[in-house]
Length: 394
Length: 98
Image 1 (cartoon, rainbow over the protein chains, first blue to last red):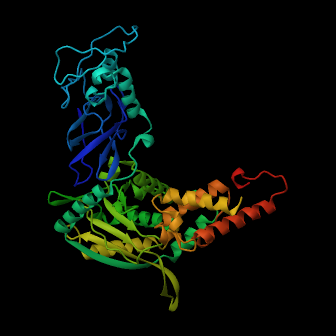
Image 2 (image 1 turned 135 degrees about the vertical axis):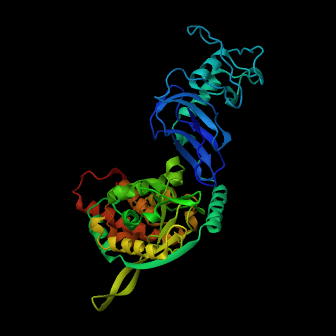
Image 3 (image 1 turned 30 degrees about the horizontal axis):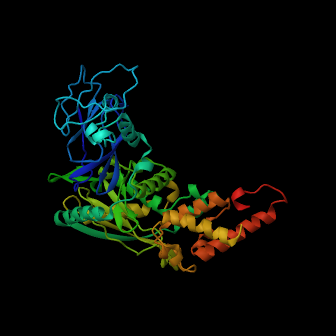
């Protein structure tokens, strides 16, 4: 079967293959990261959803291809018998002539006779190595006479494939491209989604007290932030209010059982992304916090995975300690809701008939009116507020 | 560890978080969170990094003392001196702090 360039968001049309993390012959299982693709959201680690053996890589490095283009051939366990290998779509691959492996590969290049155009000048050793490792010679820059490709050139290309991605990745995110992607998604949202907005003020003093107790004996790397409580409380509330968790596609709402919270992350210099924290409702708070830290770090470093970009079922945006008291989100299509947590502020609050200072957060909801009404939205927000009163149970 | 060395460590760790900010332009009395656009997660990462590099404990209650460049340096200096005073002469200290 073919492994294709995935669509990583409604606004993506094409992606550039930056790295192959597998080679022909490799056994892959569902969820393995097999390639790195550059998109408007930065470099994304693309996962494969079928187990099997990689037969052939069809697209070379630094090649930009539309969504849906076959990137590699995969033989799944179900597919018995030899896999027919269709010719690669781009540059023609040249079958190497078999040479005796014991012979030291000649460095001088050999010009191959009549073959598929365009003719590539490459040494037999280079061809053999390229074939073995699934490298398209058309993507290799030759350094031999007349630009011919030597085995060293292929090896250089190989190290580019195999080296730890951190070293080879073009650092940073193209903020201009990211802005274009945000603009496209948000314009579509405002065009198509009839938003309604609710807000709810919640006393989070119990959360703050509980957090300081929990954090006091912990080393900094194990400390929790209130944002983790916000995510967990939202995830748990969604179990009772499934009309806010899922996708609106092809004119109808598709609820999703799993709760994948898109965590809104600001990118320094003016960018925004909301990759998924998978199955947040079933995680311990410590796990939610660890995953949040990991997501923020990887998002900013451009190490995010395709599934994290493509499958959040709702978005949570949490301002933490800074900013303003309330934020009104724009739903990221095809999601149907976004929950915002404003800055924690100290406010006079009435408890048991007396006024006292309390820590208060304004929680907002933007909901899709095609799917839910303000009544359900109000109950959903109230449920989040209630869950935050007993942080120890989250 | 001198104040200059402490400042260097603090600046390096802040630079890791906000590489595009010119620390020379930051008022040492300004709130770093505002001046450098550092959110709660960034600040926690900063505290974590200082904790690991210098071996000092920074409880949450003390966070406000580290909100400025000046405050961070003074706080770390006091912590390192206190650790030195407690440790018996010749006792091993975290190498980064000696």
